[in-house]
Structure formats: C-alpha cells, structure tokens
Image 1 (cartoon, protein in one colour):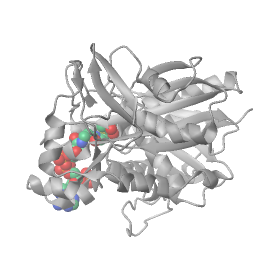
Image 2 (cartoon, helix red, strand yellow; image 1 turned 60 degrees about the horizontal axis):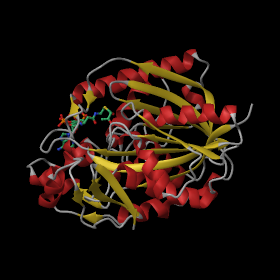
Image 3 (cartoon, rainbow, N blue to C red; image 1 turned 135 degrees about the horizontal axis):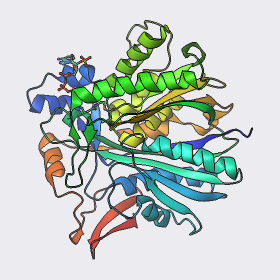
Image 4 (tube, rainbow, N blue to C red; image 1 turned 120 degrees about the vertical axis):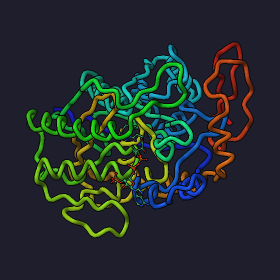
Length: 395
Ligand code: CAA
C-alpha cells in the first residue's frame, strides 16, 4: 500500500501579542492561574487587516515555495472562524498565492476537528490519485467575550500542510478511532462574533470523547499505548493536554508522563507533552490549527523522532473527535527549523490591555464598506470591504 501523509508543514500567526500575566493583573486575577493553571503565557491577537485568510495564506506561502505546486488539485480550508457563509476562504487564498484555476477549493467545518477531517479527506484523494497533492490549511481566530472565563484561552494561528504519497514528514496509518456525541459544550451562533461556551462541560466532553475515540482505535486494530512514542492533543490551552494525558493514563494504565511545564519532574515515559506545547503556550487557542501547531512544535524540538509513532488526538466541540497515528519519516529534520516559528512568535508586536480591548470590541466581520488601516507585517492583508465583498492584497 502506498504511504500517504504529511509531506511538509508551516505555521503562521497574527501581528499582535498579549501577555497573559498583564491580562490577569488587569482584572485582579492571580497570574499563576493563567500561567500554571491554564498553562498559557501569551495569546496572539489579530490586527484589523488580518483574518483567517491572511494567516492561512501566510502559512501556505513558504510551504509552496519549498515544495512547488506540481500535482496540486485540491485545497481544503478548515476553520470555525469563517468570514463568509457561502464562499470558501480558500478561494481568496488561491488568488493571493497565484495558484492555477484547476484546483478544487472547499471549506470544512466541525469546530477544532475540521483540520483532521480535511487531513483524512486529503488522504482519501491521494489514495485514489497518488500523483496528486492536497494543500490543507487550518486557520482560526479564537474569540470569547471580554471578562469571561474563556478570555485567557483566546488566540490565533494557522498551520498549512501538504498531503502526498511518499510523504517526507509523517505517514498517516490506516487505523483511527472516532467519536461523535451531540453536546452543547461550545458553539458560535450565526449572530455572534464570539463563542458561547460552558467551559467546565467542555472539559468533560473533551475527556469523554478521548476515552471513546481511544476505545474505538483499539477496536479497529490501532496500536497500544506502549507502542505510541509521542502523543499530541488538541490544546485549547496547554493544561488541557495534561488533563488528556492523565485520562489516557487512567484508561490504559500506561506509564506515560504528565509533566507539562519545563523543569517538571517526569512521572513516567516522556511522550512529548512539554515539547509539543511550546508554540501553543504562546499562540493561545488556534482551534483547527491547534493540534497541528503541537505537531510543528514536536517536530521542531524533538530530534529523535525518526521512525517513531505519533498519536494525534483531535477534538472539535459539539463534539467530533478522532485519535489517529502516524510514523515519522527519515530525514524529517531537514524540513524543520525551530527558528522559523520562534522568530514568528518573537516578532509579534505586544499590545497593552486597553489596546487589546479596543481591538476586541471593534466591529468584527461586518459586510459594510470599509478600508482597513495598514498594520500587519505579514505577507498578505485584508484590505477592507467593497460592495459587501471582502478584499485582500499582497503587502
Ligand atoms: N495558580 C495556579 N493555578 C491556579 C490558580 C493559581 N493562582 N488559580 C486557579 N488555578 C488553576 C485551577 O486549580 C484550575 O486547575 P485545574 O483545571 O487543573 O483544576 C485552573 O487554574 C483553571 O481554573 P478554573 O477551572 O477555576 O478556571 P475557570 O473556571 O475560570 O475557566 C476554563 C477555565 C473552563 C477552561 C475556561 O478558560 C474556558 O471556558 N475556556 C474555554 C473553553 C475551553 O477551552 N474548553 C476546553 C475543552 S473544549 C475544546 O478543547 C474545544 C476548544 O478548542 C474550545
């Protein structure tokens, strides 16, 4: 059987950053709650001329520069921060990247799980036509109401990856575990620019979904926990990955370490909990991109992955989840460079809390004609709205 999987991947984020200790102090919360209690130190915030399209295109640009566009006939854009009810955000990306017209473009949605649905769809397309490659873009802007418990778990980011036959980075294995339950833990109604969430219910729903997806993986011939070398989780905040690891440990009896923070004493076998959370700790939640940012982080910081099996738990509220596995290919390090993503995170412009609050409360996603101020230092920008249609340009 042809090996199919992730050939290469790249991350992008927004222009601004908010320091979570500052956010905590501004509302009289002990900073330890955000830094240790949630495992978050910063969150990315978008400039007025950025959105999921500009971030997604920014992630895909270097990826295509490195790998070319040969065989590219599908672009799947996964997001839950859609900028239009009808047109796929990926159509604007196609234009910004100068891609040819013979590419099918579609948007996929199921909360944070959408990127994994896109990955599996891409694997299916390549299985039928191994000469084709699929560009998957995961891109989201996580927004909760100001002064709500979800506020410190906001963030923004995108990860783009190419799915192909004989991938250079991660071969996706055929067995996976799936779980769907209809639950009102988190959603975003059509008339709201922020998510509605029952936070504690959502944590329980996530952990129950993990148990169900894991059991389904086992029922479908997936590997035991001992045969998985590293484990990645969807990270709405990095402490959630620790809770997930604790749950997996309980249900499997596997001696896997739950040490999350740098310097924490391991209490079992290291499966990359800390290494895979380095970027998300600074990005905040990036919804569909979150588990793939965890993958970028792991690949960037773990030099011993060749031939290792990685477990990936993808969770989307509502809720749909999947536990899949992949094998890291020889030579993956040649495609990775931690400085790229670190520089991106370091380059963000810090904003103070009053500025962040005014960015948050500014009209968001309206279709009224407007010209956006020129702020972003990214390669693409949202220029504004004319004739009720969003306009984008290359910087
Ligand atoms: N020092 C250290 N730790 C502290 C502390 C301090 N001073 N004060 C509190 N803490 C700890 C608490 O003990 C708690 O730890 P545990 O979870 O290990 O018990 C942690 O900080 C958080 O405290 P609370 O539970 O009191 O926090 P909260 O009620 O204000 O909100 C939250 C937490 C429910 C996660 C909230 O941030 C939220 O609603 N977030 C959005 C929803 C979310 O991310 N859900 C995750 C699962 S759903 C999903 O994954 C999909 C998705 O992307 C949204």
